[in-house]
Amino acid sequence: MTIPDERWQRRIADLWATFDDHEPQDFLAKVKDLAGELPAGNAIAEYELASAYDSTGHEAEAAVHYRRAFAEGLPDSHRRQATIQFASTLRNLGEAEESVRLLTAERDAGSDELDDAVTAFLALALTDLDRDREAAALALGALSRHLPRYNRSLSNYAKALIEP
Image (cartoon, rainbow, N blue to C red; front, top):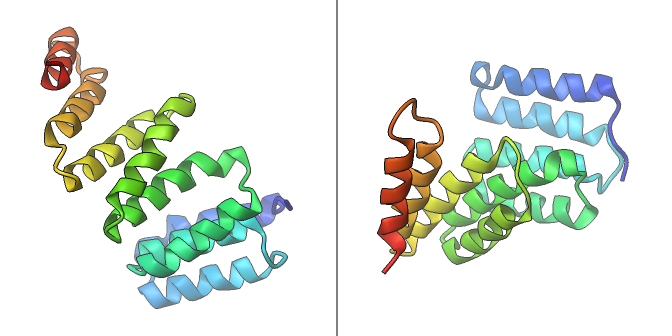
């Protein structure tokens, strides 16, 4: 797995920072150009392509690139974010069960600053499977950690939603 140099990483980050300044096809073309500078089959290039297709409304094409990125072995610095994005794409493609499976495994795999994002997207996927109480419990539990007051109460209410 070849990690792109800092200059390339800065260029892709700068491009993403200006996403709203581009027409979707123009943005996608720019990401394709940058990805093309990396060796064929590069996991980070595939991830960036997946993200670009995803962000421009081409979920089916994004899924192809996410799968390639994972198959090529994404570094840990990209893997969790890619999992969240891929699970969201799968949900949008009608594959909510696969989305729930990926995000549940991700919740159990460790903890970092993306924990609440994992939980939020898991809650969305659960609603697609008519598991609304479980989704609400997850969302409320995540929210409870950020409130200046009522943390314990909201956390207890969240638990009560799924306990018999």
